[in-house]
Length: 97
Image 1 (spheres, one colour):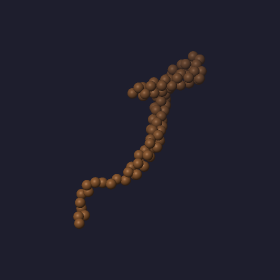
Image 2: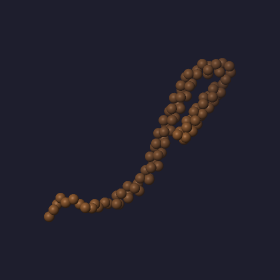
Image 3: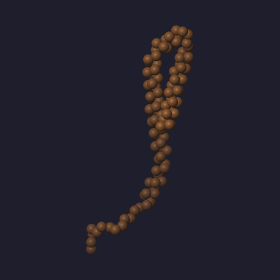
Image 4: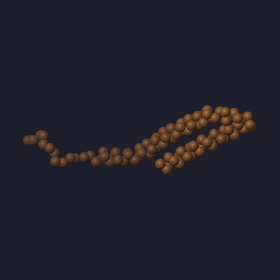
C-alpha cells in the first residue's frame, strides 16, 4: 500500500468560501466610512493650519482694518469666507483629480 502518492484531485469546503464571500460586502461600508472620516480629519487639520498661518501673517492688516473702523465680525467674516473658498476649491480639485 502506498502512503505518499501525489493526489490527482483536491476537495475544497465551499461552505467556508461562501461564508467569507458573504461577510465581505458587510465590512466594505465600514471600511469606506473609516477612510472618509480619516480624510475629513486630515483635511480639516490642513485648513486649520492654512488659516492659522494666514491670520498670523496678516496681523498688521487686521490692525489697520480695525483702526479704520472694521468690526471684529467683519474680519471674522473675511477669514471664514477665505476658509470656505479654500475648502470648496480643494474639494472641487479633489473630485476632478
